[in-house]
Length: 190
Image (cartoon, rainbow, N blue to C red):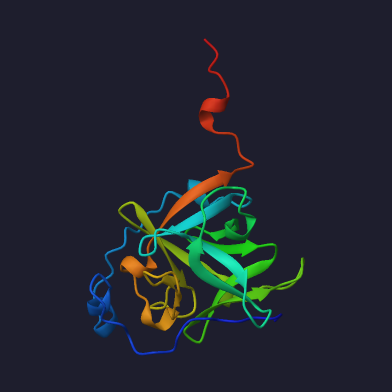
C-alpha cells in the first residue's frame, strides 16, 4: 500500500449529546434501510459527502507532516476538487471512493487515505458498504461490519471503531457529475 495517515483520535467512545453513544456502547439492531437507490453511486460519478454532524464536506487535505488525511471541514461546490470523490461501484451496495487514486480505507478501526497507483490491486479495506437512513447514507467497512466512516461535530475525523450508524456516520450525497444521461434527457417520441 502507498502512503497513509489518519488524524482520528484513538480515545474511547464519545458520549457527547447528539452522538450515537448508545449505539457504540451496546449492540443494537441495524435500522438502516437495506435497499439503497444506487443512482448516486454509479461508477464514474463524482460526488461530495456532506456530514450530518459538521454540515461540511468530507475532504482530503495535506497535514502538517505532508501526509494526506481526511476531515469533515470541506467547502461545497464542484470547484473544490479536494472535496470531490469518484465512485467505483463494486457490487449491489458496495462502493469504493477515491480522489485522484487516493482511496478511503478502513483498517484496524481507523479511517485513512491510501494511494493506489492506476491498475493496482485494491484490497477489501477500500470497499465501503452503503446504507440509507432516511435522507442520509452511511459508509461501513466491508471487513469490520460495525466500523464506519465518521466525522465529529467540529469536523475532525472520528475513529471508525467508535462510529456506528448514528449522526456522526451520516452524510448527504451531492452528485456533481455523472457520465450517465438522466432518463428525462431523451425526449419521448409521440
